[in-house]
Length: 207
View 1 (cartoon, rainbow, N blue to C red):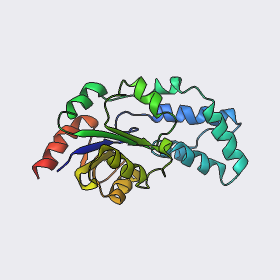
View 2 (cartoon, rainbow, N blue to C red):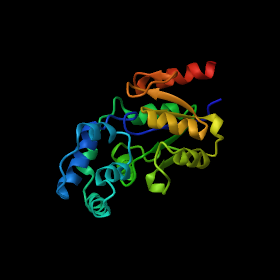
View 3 (cartoon, one colour):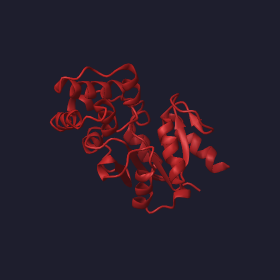
View 4 (spheres, helix red, strand yellow):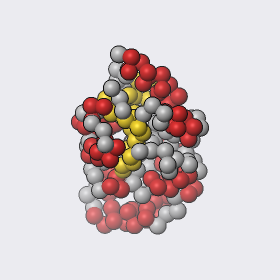
């Protein structure tokens, strides 16, 4: 039985590679750091901002503090405009709400509220969790535990939709079923795109 379907944000609800790279490069430029390397660009899609900054700081507290301060002063609006949903998210998610409770669990933090407003999704999710909740970022299971708690659902009745190994590890650690989306994750239950999620859910329920 699946009562709650929890979505990751980046790579699932929308493609955000261009947006994330532009955001982090703006932060790095503000503190005199070189832009993201190709490997950092790949990883910034699914890591939290704290994880990205900590990796770049390499243990130097002053560098980390400067990046965090620069990030807090940025206007997120230009970067939100670069998000690329593959379909119209609001009607898609409202249709799913006819059969499931919906959750959102993302390694984003300060940008979550602005992101939901930008995408007109403020009233869609029954529970929203992120690094802004003072939980460990994925792959730790903390935010998924908190999401199912807020939705008042047992973990074995919840499913997490993610696009990375980080998401898969978090779901397994939290005791949730997992459905992969896209090519960045390899798992038994996987679909090519967000549009295929409803059919995948129907197949899982039929089993």
